[in-house]
Image (cartoon, rainbow, N blue to C red; front, side, top):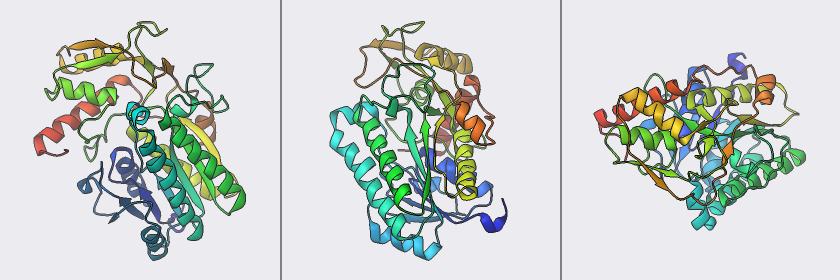
Length: 337
């Protein structure tokens, strides 16, 4: 793609975990980037100096409209939102507000501003408990928690908007995102994170005393939940390629799984962290959490066939090593919450 084809990109939630990695991937590929983030869970230090930063909320349509006009935004990458599944069960209205209502406001501002391309940070939680694993994009979408529903509603909005307006979109359904930038520029930094690999490397680093294993009676080989873990840098690379696809084929929209097509159990992940640190993490067995399916693994054939995307950091030990290196980096520099 030529320099002239690289339109300015508005990245929502670009000071957060996945969003900051997408910003790095865009900048590394020569894209002009504008970040909007209200810093409720993100960090301004995570935004590179090469990007324009605006502190604000995506529901502030006047602010978003001003950014679109001022910077001639041609595409939106939308990461802003709430992501903790158990929290969505106990506080569903927060998730419908942050993930659905505010997304509607953002999409409306984008349409009014003439933005032609929209990439949405969706989730495998849209599938609920799939009938078949690995799960395909054509599988039944029946979320079992408000988080999944809040994301699926936004997918529906984008489908309808793309049919009514000159905008195409790509919804990327993430499986379990983990790891950190191999160059040590960003990583998962929010305190109180619930993602397993983040929790495990915190425990291995002495920031937690143990790791809770939620559910040991699932219909899986060792009784613990199985997930498809994808390295955040591989995921960020997929976003850049998806943007190139949308620009090259402006009449087509896409929904694609982002995963590696294989799963690891909770205990297998903890064993990988033990190997990386030569320390045994204390495991405490706990009941299942509300809203957790037993197994989620991607059928990733569509993304492999549609994009020139080939994962580069797809070994579990690599994901763990990068997450652990970032955890040590946070401790050395006193970053995070």
